[in-house]
Length: 359
Image 1 (tube, helix red, strand yellow):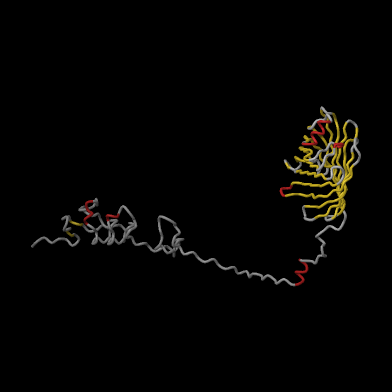
Image 2: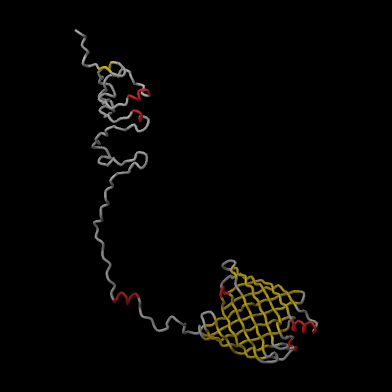
């Protein structure tokens, strides 16, 4: 009788090695080896070796289905072909759908997020406005109550009250602008002049009626009176406009008609540069053009003179500001010739110090 082969042993047709029965501690126990690719035995260190005993009951891989497992992919996904165990009742991810989970990206991908519960607090509806509500929000106004100020107002500005002392002597000068009325109709009073060598020099006074034509411009008209210590007085008609141009330039353009000069134009432009909230630099330019010669007053036809100045003031209060400045005046054309013939200079420069205030 031939020797009977024990039922617990099998022969591998490819290796001839006897395969012992699986021990209970073998980690691969229960794995189906039918579909195992023997072509990878060259890379598998266990090819042709006697298999260890069956897997123990504590083996974490026990019960894994190895039928579809490709040993050539052992270097890729370690979980390929493994059956995922059922989630424990205390698992925080229990009930999550893991089929679309991407382990390399978002750990929460594929989780079903519960909907946010709607608020149980009812929203109070907005009441419809009534006629009483509209009346309380928009009270009736009197006609033109806010358009124009009905009361009379006034403003007196000493634009410059200054003194100087240089090689040509010392002196003082003033310039005053005042108005009385409302925001549409006003009476304007202007005066400017100077005093030198302890004697009153040339000075002038304008009395003008002003009418506002836009929020920024007034048309003015009236009379002008000029006084000189060496020549007779001169009174003429005056008409012009004044106001604030774009970029906040204060402009005055006046035409004086009558007298020996027949017509004369006077321009003045000034601008306030705010260096700080209280320190202000004020450049100013004045010019005059006459139609005819007035030899007794030293005025010739054409461009007569141009005066430029810079005054730097500090407003201690808005009503009171001391300042220092520099002024330069030059005569041109026929006016310069008349002053040369009289033995006088045609240009003058001086430092000044003074006050600017209003009430």
